[in-house]
Image (cartoon, rainbow, N blue to C red; front, top):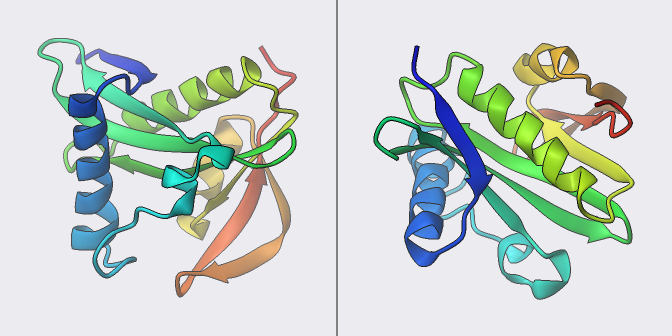
Length: 153
């Protein structure tokens, strides 16, 4: 069974691969965004975006990505969870989400949220997240606000 390494992108090559995966998934495959999904949460220093990647342990190929960014104060959001085709069996996504939660615990984060598409709510619930409020439309698609349990081990 393939093993994966989850880590914060640390250099230009890793960031290029990270943004490449997001481009593939959210622009080219899902057409959620027209030209790019990069926004101010990625570029504005206030938000302190942390870009996390999943690498195949065997050869270092990047297969997944997620970002965490400060929304305000001690509230952070996760987003743009993505895995390359062939790596969407839940293992890469679950590893990315778990690593993101672990990373947030090491920050000054007290509240960690994510907007997820309805078909992914059950996946997040299995990882200890809970729905908050009613679904809302984002980028023309329905999304459910979820909150991580930062008190869990």
